[in-house]
Length: 426
Image (cartoon, rainbow, N blue to C red):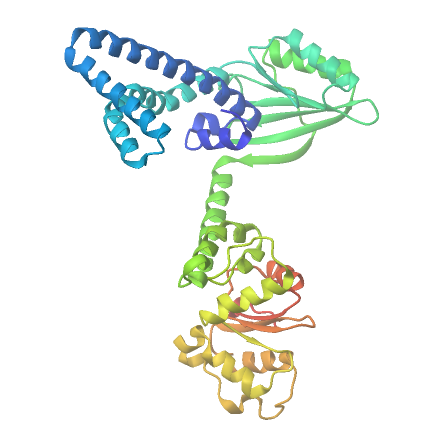
């Protein structure tokens, strides 16, 4: 088990591990992976030994192994004679299934049964000891001598910081950390509270002796320094952090659902666009990952291809209308009325005479007049202007305005989209 992404995946859903840093998580997961590998290899060896022993005790098993051996010999003979191997492969593989199940079933059972308990056990053991983490790794069961060695390494530049973690529940301070300033002095930071809610205090321009004496009191006598004159540099509330994370996840899911609705009725290779939905959560350019049914999906697309893809996806699904910047008033009205959202909200339907006073006006004027026409509804048109094609994009109000502006700049397009009235930008 290696890699930070793999460690994060293994730790998901285990509170004891989620409270640890990524370096610590990776170390624990690597250790547990080695334990599981040893356990699985042991089980495989035992299974093979038992199977061989039983083969001598029961003639049926010996006959079963002879049958597999004969099938393999026949397959090899056919292979040398260029005979079709499909039927022979099936003939060999079918009797092998019980053997494979006996050999690999128990190890897999051991893996899925023991993985979570072993991770929890290692996490609890780690949380119950003093730990020292640097930018080069993490050690457990440390003494003050190791803190002194870390301080020397920090002073000569071998490391850039180190963090001293106290055993969970020992005192109302989860950790203390230090780093070197450019002037040669040190910054000392201490956290007060617990794993769920804490405040981080900082003190600058300390000497090496100041830091070591404070850490010795912290490590040996479990004394938290007085921080009345220290700077408060941050607070952590696990409940609030989890709530914010849940809200972020809900918004991302909402955006993903919107994206899937945009491409939901595409067919052929176009359906692979949905696989790019996760990219949309970080970058609206995922809107443009689309090809025609007779072409393979290509994520290395040009700006022209992206503009065409936007038309294909949104116009095809009547989510939007694509118009030139010099579009007439009648064309603009017709395009807006043809969008599915407007068709499903009769109160948004535009009348042909809405631009009669200025039929040759600019798109910005069109948007302003439409907003006036829709002043008693919950929707407004918001316009982003560049010097290229015009897209009437309805609705993408789940995408924030800043993201849309970046999107418009990227594709060189003039995008007009619909938003709720209280978020309008007239």
